[in-house]
Length: 362
Image (cartoon, rainbow, N blue to C red):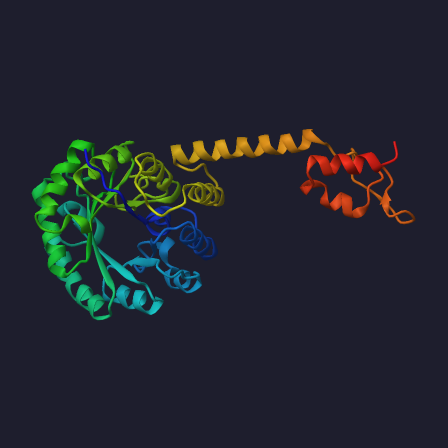
């Protein structure tokens, strides 16, 4: 089995992850999340969505989010756009890439964007042309490529048809998306085999939701097919407002842990990503939906507690309460240390602490 040496990760948490949150997420938190992800090494971040706030109210602040982030050189910030009005907003906000989407299921297309697959492609044609004219990268996403909440199984030929339509629009990249997370590894190969007949494999990506706990297994199957681009969501955030029961995309922490274990480089810092996942989960008031991330965070907490305990037990502070400086001597009335010695105690070596203790009155 030959696996790729490097994988590109598209972090979709700020958009695909947060869009399904029932409680409002502040613009400031969204901005900080994106900036933290960029600092951790993510070179592609799906940052916003320029859709009607009536349909996806959580994404109503896309322009403010894009205006507030600290842009890093080499990072591509993308946004979802459903129409020309959305594209105009995305261009004004300075996105690097826009994303259009077509379903491989007629029923899902009708429920999601109120039109047939063919009609959706006609709608996207002027959007794609204008995006190209503006010099933007164009990404297409095939929703429900591996299963539909209304029709059930989706034929690989239906996937191939939508991929061909998106390729005809001029898409630079195309996502094969298990939007509702029903696929198992045996579904992955036929879908990608159908897609690659219409579009280069190196520009296809895997987008696997984890509703049934199969996302990592499906990533592995896609790796074996030669796929080198994957989407993931920090802390397993997400779902789809138009896909009943769907949970978030594969957790970024779980994906990174797998790839690191396989010796596949990503350019992303796993430890920093774990910290980000815990941070955003705390802000949302719940536990992160990532097994690897939570396990690594627990391990880091135990190690930190162990190091702190070792410091505290090696040479404890001679004062059992808060030090009180005697103005007449400049020393603590309890332990006899100077203000400078008290301030530096936490960073002193054990030998330095013992030297100070030897000078204090018994």
